[in-house]
Amino acid sequence: MKTQAIMAAAFASTLIVASPVIAQDRAGWPDNFTVGTASQGGTYFAYGSGWANFVAENLGVSGGAEITGGPMQNMALVHTGDLKFGLTTMGPARESMEGNSPLAPGMKMDNVCAMFPMYETPFSVTALSSSGITSISDIPDGATIGFGPAGSTSDTYFPRMMETLGVDFKRRNGSWSDLGGQLQDGLIDVVAFAAGIPIPAVSQLEVQTDVNIIGMTDEEAKKVTDNFPVSEFIIPASTYQSLDKPSRVVSMWNFAMVNCDVPESFVYEITKLTMEQNERMVSIHKAARNSVPENYKKNNVLPWHAGAARWFNENGYTIEESKIK
Image 1 (cartoon, rainbow, N blue to C red):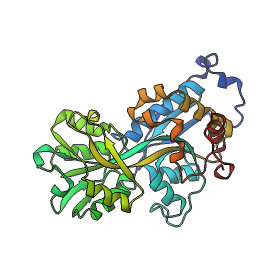
Image 2 (tube, rainbow, N blue to C red):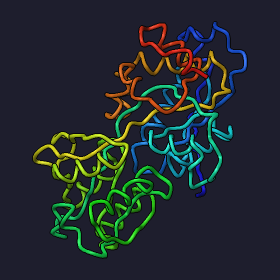
Image 3 (cartoon, rainbow, N blue to C red):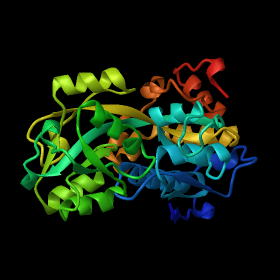
């Protein structure tokens, strides 16, 4: 996938007085940084680009976001050092750590460290109201389903979930914005989204047309949670104007990650800034309501970067030495 960079310049001369970090040890700090996100129209891009700007503005280091194929590709880019920061979900992170990434079979991507918890990614289904599809069991045999960018969390897990639920389908990949447009134009039947809520592409869709946001039955949710590394999740009715009641789905946790060789002091200051200013993070994206230190325990896959672990340990969130790299 051709990547694009969205860079947000931050001028250190305007920040020297405002930021106490300037006076601290900045040995080895980069002049700029880029965070790997996912496709436009998805939560990763909105969250990641806003977060990069926030960090740049406060730490006096130019930063921005890069469009990528999502968690699997981000794991590879951060492991190799092509990008220093990225966003990932725990499922793709585990597969990549164990050498089971389809992007590089056999390569154990173990030079990736956790930085802070982001939010849960719900797996939800959207169809046009005119299709008559109101449940997963309504999806007709041979329906074309958009699963997001190739190698994304949705593309990695949602097809398997659909097969487990007995859905017969044709697979389509693309950015969330592109798939939303294809759904609206009748070129595909369903979009299977896996992204933090509210998903920008869904919010845009429901402004332009009538859509059904489809949840899971008790039986469907149990079958999926029994077979995949996910847990039940309730999408509040207030999330979308198309919902008149809460919607039961499943979800997987997301974490911000960093190449393990990035200087400890830099990662410490980034973690401190992000964890101590949740109000500002929520103004970037509502999913950041869950980007709080209490959720650090949701990481049971990645080792912790020493800089991030230092902040958590200093603030009463214990990370054992054996889990720090």
